[in-house]
Image 1: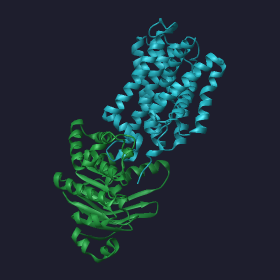
Image 2: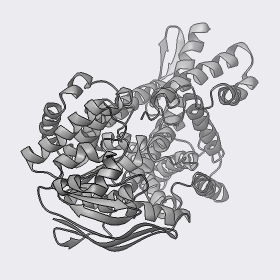
Image 3: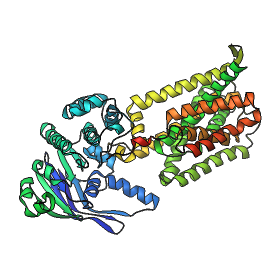
Image 4: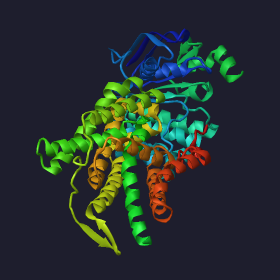
Length: 248
Length: 290
């Protein structure tokens, strides 16, 4: 469904992603595992097209030169240069890292804003589903999102991405800064939405332990390069992964 | 005298609010400080005048035409000029100010100055409210102000475009991930802001004459209200216009009319020293939590 071929991304002369290739099939949960500055966010921004927007803005400003080489294919169509809002219309939706929400609007309003491309009826239906998926949000419907805790904001952020009705959902570090309890409920929710509505999920994480058991396929990224790939189980059994991420 | 002062202070406040709202809307959503705002205000009044006097259109149609024309000009300004300097505050200010300056000074150059350049009041009559004479035009201004604030509130809370406006205003990049095109929204924001200037001009100008130098005055007033209220905050704008509106009228009545001019400027200074983000500026407590 989504295919990345020899992707290279430069910020000025710094190489953020180097010759990265990966394939994502429909209905899979794919994990991108890597430490800080491995290139996870750059990869997510490239898949969602945000990098194209960043490049245009930096170009206008005369700032950092961002170059993208290689190909991103979605449903066998080359979308390497497609703008982010076009990609959203195609069904690729990103939930950015650090639970991006609109802090001054209420929880319900946040989801309405996210539903820019959807009709009122569709928003209502999905909102119902989001509140079933995250029952914890139900009591904060009218509360301003900025006052929610980090975990609740992350749930809301995922919920907002779901409102767009994505075919491919990109989650950038959904577990960042969450307590183990919250991590578990977010992981459960991701698994649930993958099973029940069949959304393809690509998530990047540095916490391998909670993520590995649920993914169909994982890619380990270090310094912008792919070092390992395999099914979740294969990665869990890999001694290097154990040493680097489980501290065994 | 006190009641009369209060009534006129109220009207003055609504006038300030009308003037500042468009500027605030544009800044709040797109981050563009539209320094051509005063020029749009004057331009729309001249457009109405030209439509009435040169093309002999009915008054009402001329007003509608000038509002649409000003909005189109705002959108054009974004697409042609602002798009290229987007995100660089100083360049945006210089570009918009230059455009405003050219519009205003062109009118002056072509001799659009004098008492014959005025718009007739919508209804030429006056009523007595609690012993004070108030002309109907001023009441129309108050009604227009209330309608505009309510319409804006409804728009930003109940339509998907209005909600997208608020999304972009809070976090542009996140809004982008939901398919909200920031250039399109910013074009609309500048255009609707210009439209607000045109609406304000249409109801306020009939109180006096049209003159290019008023353009600068309008810009300073809009800036004063927005800075005091906190840029980008609608509630702040309404509060600040009442604050300045009352302060001006009361200074005029009880201290002396020549002191009125410094009220808004002094208020800017005080607010900038005491609370630089404005009285209702963005709340600090809502800053990112991790």
